[in-house]
Amino acid sequence: MAEKRLLVTAPAGKGSGKKWLIAAVAAAAVVVFALIFSLPSLSSRQGNVALVKISGHISSGEGFLETSAKPDDIIGMLEKADEDARVKAILLEINSPGGSPVASEELMKAVKATKKPTAAVIRDIGTSGAYWVASASDYVIASPVSLTGSVGVTASYLEFSELLNQYGVRYERLVSAEHKDIGSPYRNLTAEEKTIAQEALAKMHNYFLSSVTENRQLTDTAAIDKISTAIVFLGSEAKELGLVDELGGKKEAEAWLKQQSNLTGIKYVTYEKKPLFDIGTLLAKQSAAAGSALGKSFLATFSGQADANIAGAKIRT
Image (cartoon, rainbow, N blue to C red; front, top):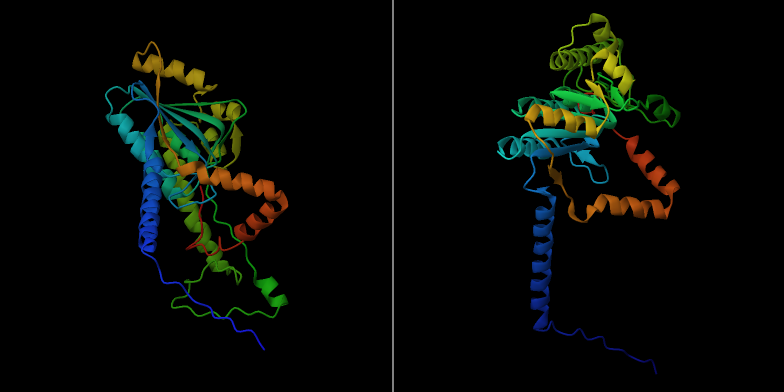
């Protein structure tokens, strides 16, 4: 005789409601802690020099694994430092390859607007948009072997039309205006579209260059012409061109700040944004442990996608 089994579902007990309540409270606590830990914080409130770090890609967008410098966060730190009567000067510590033109310009203007003596120290790299920010400070210091300059703009992208043809895939073009899909990765740019794109980049480059020239009060035509090529210079070369005031690092910056602000000693108020549990670092370590090959494959897959059309692409300084 076949055995019959009866499956009985137990009714939810009185404790289930409490469990949901506890879970909701726990979730809310996590959100609150995330907000608290992600706010700009001060390591010391008794300092006389504000230390503001600009590290990673300069972008207004939200990056998950990417370390980035957010203009809103850094501008808030600069404003606090400028308003604090105990802070006599500001030191920018820069280690960034640049980023989006708009985000970089916002930071540059914020630095330029500060009323207190401001020095910028370029660490390993301070190029493109990051150099634009540094140029707005009163004094720029870089190591002889640091990378700086690169006063230029790029908007390159990958174009896949030939690859699609090999697989019998065709791009059906439907647009409301002639140049609406300019820069689409699924077709070649026309000669006219290349001209349009280059003219736009040229205008951005001229604005970028003229701003740096004004910030640094450059008058040597030969030096400006060389800077306009968007070459990345070593710190020693940058000093010869007038992009850097002094070769060195934090020690030289401190000496300048003491002189400018009549300080006998320096104690830093460090402004920084601390992400909850430093999730990006933890995930990066886990990815490395899982295997660099897998990580490289993952990054290659996503980095090759839609840096696509120039209207919606990432234009970088």
